[in-house]
Length: 213
Image (tube, rainbow, N blue to C red; front, side, top):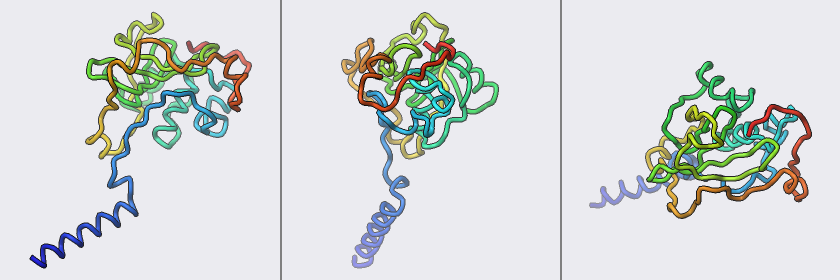
């Protein structure tokens, strides 16, 4: 009995030490959906964002998607060039990330002239994305029941850019939300003018980049 108790104490001590030294290896990190506009995080500014550094920052769908991937993975995305219509083919031709038709958290949804990031997938199959629009909304979220209806554009599929830890994949594969939480309409919308008049330091660069609506 004493031997069993001693073994249990040692095992508990080991877990506490491991959790302190390697917290990510013991505790699964939950996926945190972005439902509000970025507000100065370096992933979306000239500090780390490849598009912002060349003058094509937000509002811009590719600049936003680049920043969101960076934010989720903690490392620069492998796709760092091209407009929205090119991302699907750049990834496919270079073998950067896996891709397919199934929505997954953190994946980049690709249309013929737009990209967005999957933030939630409901049990019914509804997909909530976060996105930005060149010359339009700085940021918004939308829920779709049919991805092929988005702006009347051709839908290519999803690029699986998000790399969750193994423990996260096993314990929390989806960020569950109530069906009524999202309506299939824009949420948290900001026009470029409204955002420029705010106190946020990220502004819309005045340039002639390819439209990514």
